[in-house]
Image (cartoon, rainbow, N blue to C red; front, side, top):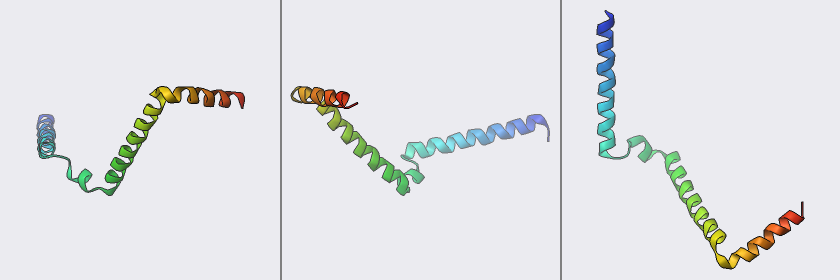
Length: 80
């Protein structure tokens, strides 16, 4: 097999793979991610972490808690 024949075959294989991937992406999520229990668990964990971050952001930006947070930070600094 010549170099050019091999190059053409490799190009055809790569292009075919890209076409198949585009079809799967156009149909929605890939089948392996939709049925994988680890992926589902990770999605749930990320959602829970996002909710916790939202609570922490609210606490950090709430004016009523600013004085209390300042006192707590000062206590931590004093306990060094």
